[in-house]
Length: 101
Image (cartoon, rainbow, N blue to C red):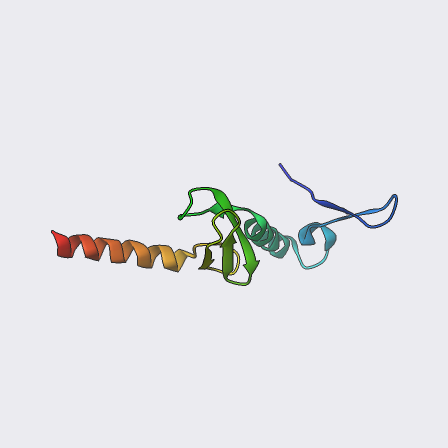
């Protein structure tokens, strides 16, 4: 259920690269769950609309780039497509279909 990433610090020590696990009992459970959700989404790969592969990764806050085709796209801070962008895109598509027919 949980995936862990490890980083070797010295010969026998390692550090878990997950802020929600490294925080221990601090900050409260609900805040740690929100941070974990953001961390998982910002480090995962997303689908590229241009080349059709799952190769889009986050470069900086709001900047997403595809490793295969090299396209760069603006998006949300933690996800490629924000909820408001999805609603705007669907509204534009619906209005375009109304004017064409």
